[in-house]
Length: 132
Image (tube, rainbow, N blue to C red):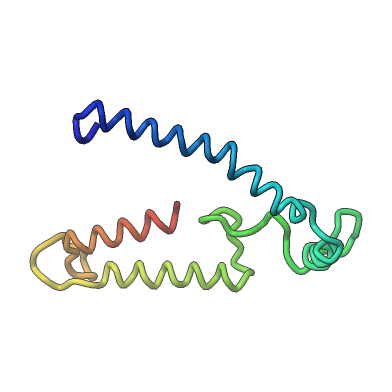
């Protein structure tokens, strides 16, 4: 499509189909044969998970809450030290992203001075990658 050549397009489609056929006929059987023993957790792993996360019938909770890991901002708990440090880092870096500047060109942000387009790009990327 980029080269505007039907020949290149059809060769790339053919290459993709060949990769899918190889995956279905060679790779997946090899993976199942090699790693099938790792499908079920061992007794040691089951004991470890019971200690760390607790069991469903046990009234005592484990050390960690299963299924409550931090995903972007979902399941944020300021009682966990890693989540608290994440929030502090986000506030710290956002403050310095706005505080940078001082030139007379760009966008005025009051007490923070002036924000240039390159700094807006960095700030926008920062917010995008932290939220998503």
